[in-house]
Image 1 (cartoon, rainbow, N blue to C red):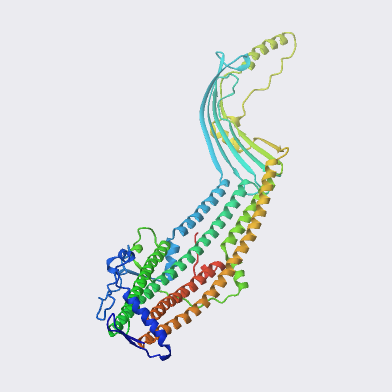
Image 2: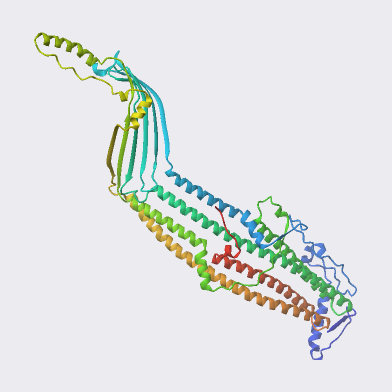
Length: 602
């Protein structure tokens, strides 16, 4: 169909489709009325539009040639477009594992658990303590046998003690070894050694026979600390898997955003080409000027979509940078990231049964559930032990030593009796009787004469010792605290079992959904490719029909919009397929293995 405008009052047209003359006449009349309708004053909506977007198109403009505008400038806030950073997905994963703050927090949690275990094991470290002091005392006496002079006994001593104590790793026993040494001086007349050096060495061991024999609080703390370390390892692997999946999704989102930006820019270019084509047809008299307005509107619409796509590029790039940048001052924030990996269109071939088995074997959440169950079993074992009575076997063995210097003073008891004995003996002899037998000599053993070294030697020779063996019993009459704690731990075990089953169901749902998503994304991609190919053919065909006068501008613009949408859908389907593959790797717990990543935190 060819339409030629000569004047506002004189319209001539010729129709090449004879059977459709009436319909063609109505269509041309509608276009004529629409063209005349362009002459009234601008509407309020037109007045609100910015001046550069005003359409300066008269109702009849056979010689109108608007100035061509360049493509919009695609500048981005805070990013130097001239400084590009090529980035592969493996490099992005490496940067994320090295710099991501969630990964760093998880790694620090593992180190904290290591120190917690070391702290719990420190309960078996022996403890050495000692005291040393000087003491002087003056005690009044109330008996002639107290041995003091001037009504008091004065005594001074230098005392030193040391204790080594600790717990045994097995069987819950505890021990302490005590050593003491004293230098003692006194004015007591009955003291044979002055100064004297008493020493003592005592070993005591307590062994639980019931409560605490198989399991005690110290061993419980160590076992729980070990399990918590395993728990933080599993949490670290889970965080690593989640970060890998997030980086992969962010990477493919950026790939789509950049390629979609290119598609939208090509759409603007094609729309402007179509606008120029319509302007040429208006010049030739084949189209009405209103068709130029329609093409202008199409260009403006595509430009809006272009700027929205640019915003999407910035948003997705910032999301990826947030996952891989070292900190907020990293130079990476000022660079333009250029993904170098193309989309992977090969889907993993795995059955539902194999995927479920892999998920049950590899998912860190199940490993964390297992560790939580093991910790609960430790608590049950400990609280069951606490319900038993406390029966301890206690043994003590001690050695003592002594040495000193003889005081050199006479024993008041023996010295006064010597004079009396001599007098009695004289009377006996005068009376013809025999003398009284001499009393045994009051002497100090030579082994006790000496200084501090002699006292220690006497101690180590074990000549003087003592020992004691006994049983200590502590029997709570009801022991409700221990019984309640045991009952609580048993219920806690049931709760953990229920949560574990719930977790397995949730994992099954995730695996099924992930497999379905991969299958659906693959089918969507196949359909999107066909749609894009068909849209390209339709658009090209509609352009040829417009040139031949067998179509309208509306249909051409509609085909152009459909083509742009189809191209975007194909790009989205490609990246969605790669994101679906990443989600499947996360659901089966194979993200680390598939990406050849070995996690080492210790």
